[in-house]
Length: 248
Ligand SMILES: CC(C)(COP(=O)(O)OP(=O)(O)OC[C@H]1O[C@@H](n2cnc3c(N)ncnc32)[C@H](O)[C@@H]1OP(=O)(O)O)[C@@H](O)C(=O)NCCC(=O)NCCS
Image 1: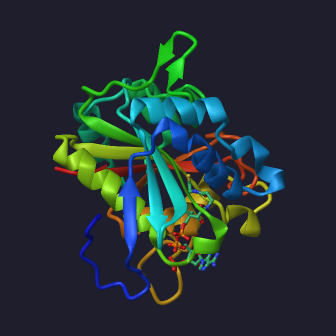
Image 2: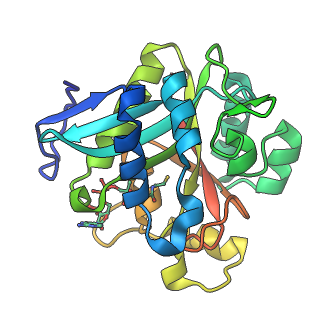
């Protein structure tokens, strides 16, 4: 049982996080499929990618009331270390949103989610984006089944991944995150417009208006840079953002 201290009344108990086994592959695929509607098929991680993550031990399964309700995937990125992230965060602290094209070049970062995760497969075709000895974690993706949304269950998966990372000596967790409500406001936004949108707060709160950014910030993540063409994602207009959690 994962114990999380919270005053959040929306949180509900009877929540359990387990490391799935290969026999759970069908359940994991079912959760992944239910997370996306028919127009978003490209967003669904395929069975082989999910199998790889189970084998590598880089996916967690959330059960609520005994019902498999969500998954989170991550890796320890082979392409970045804590020194580089600390440098990026030093710049961010001085200037706010960082220009993606500059930091990609300067720190030799993967330009998009596919490069960062080997297309979600992590390991295969002679490429491996996961190095367990890395001192960082990269959050690949998180899904809660539609029936269980709106209870902040996502926080259990994120907090647990952060706690396990910290306990394992990782200094930062990062991700190339989605902006799923952007398409409700914009057809073809510029980077400036996406930055302005990400600064907007949900009414009556200090948290971002977009639910994709909201759960990260609620869990301590910083919205560091807007990433254009991060993945084919209609809802996010193919935009995303670099999120950084300082675990030190
Ligand atoms: C993003 C996602 C993981 C959030 O999971 P969650 O546990 O429902 O998160 P929350 O409970 O914090 O809900 C987020 C917002 O959804 C809205 N919401 C409330 N009830 C809802 C419901 N029944 N159904 C959908 N959304 C609801 C609320 O606006 C809530 O905002 P709040 O933070 O002010 O409460 C989930 O929506 C999902 O799996 N989406 C598809 C995959 C995805 O985009 N993953 C994230 C990037 S990889």
